[in-house]
Length: 226
Ligand SMILES: [Mg+2]
Image (tube, rainbow, N blue to C red; front, side):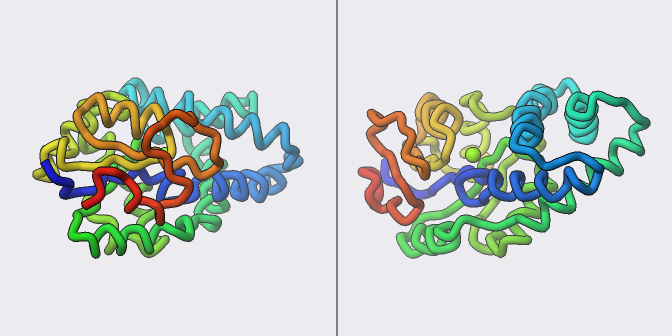
């Protein structure tokens, strides 16, 4: 079965979420009267994933996971409206720092030039992820965007990949998954029958991964590439 599509992760793969989140929180903290220390930034960062995981598991709404993160971070409570207003301050700074990785647009054009389709599979929310693609100029290049909201299941569940492929009209064996998270984007994709490549920008491994890329520009070095 030959390759027909490349299914890309968004955060950490096409979109530089970590840099934007870091810049966002450092600008935001002084605006709410808190010093932007490394410790405070690290604490805010560490609280991101546990609360997003609760939303992905379907136990809380998307706005509610933000309020819970904020309550835990500040150690104080407030009405939903008050917490939403404080979180909006963070979002403003975060969004002001949004940018795609330098290799993202080139890679999407290279994939298309090879005769392959592109799509995005992300554990983020549909509204925010589509906004990221639009704001960074990638919407027209990225193809369909598959999210937890639409699929009803998140990576690393293999059904996230199977359902995305079905919606896309491709068989798992015709698709290459590419992402920065080895467990979510590579191991889980292979469990669903896809090919996979690990985008290891920082070079942290795992070093025995057979398809390891330091940049999206290296995609054509994948053994499955046409
Ligand atoms: Mg990622």
